[in-house]
Length: 275
Image (cartoon, rainbow, N blue to C red; front, side):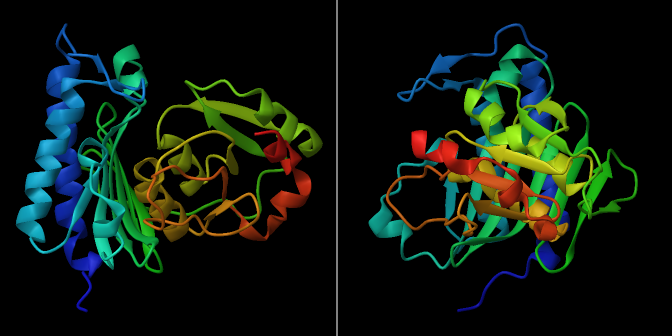
């Protein structure tokens, strides 16, 4: 099979994510966000759908033979999906709650998944005009507006007082229990896949996710983190599987800036048994 070479498409993918971000901002500035509630009780806005359409149409034009799985078009059966060796995985607006709260901490996410692993990803932050992107094995970058891209990498070793990033919208008492053995650390709250990006650029050292996420929430940002030198693993140290089961839910996971630091020995991961 002829796989996509993400190096040849990355400029296009960044441009697509930025166009999707512009579509989101067009609605962000309006009084009516068009909020409805989906079957899983999560919110959906007109901006989610507008971004989805921009990305869907652009990727179809760029790679007409490559399947697309988006949060807003997720009704594709596993019998079909399991035949995909490579596909696009998209969250057109990650952090819809942050969008509704108008705090700016929401993102556009486009990932290329190959044989169950993210190999390239773009995470765009519309309000900041900021784009994180990476190709695993090639490197990761951050572009601020129209400035030249800057190479980013995870912090190795971690800060003497580790910086831990957690969710803005999901309070989690288990996280406090898990972090107790770590001792002194600095906690930063952030919305959406920006939590991964803080680790990727070396602003944070650890992001433990002890709660539900879906594959489209993590694919693009995982590629950026791993392109920048970090890893994303389940609590047992295993890679996160993509497109390996009927449902889209991820296991609990850790985003580690320095994979050699022995984080699992420094955390109380027994809280997973209480899930």
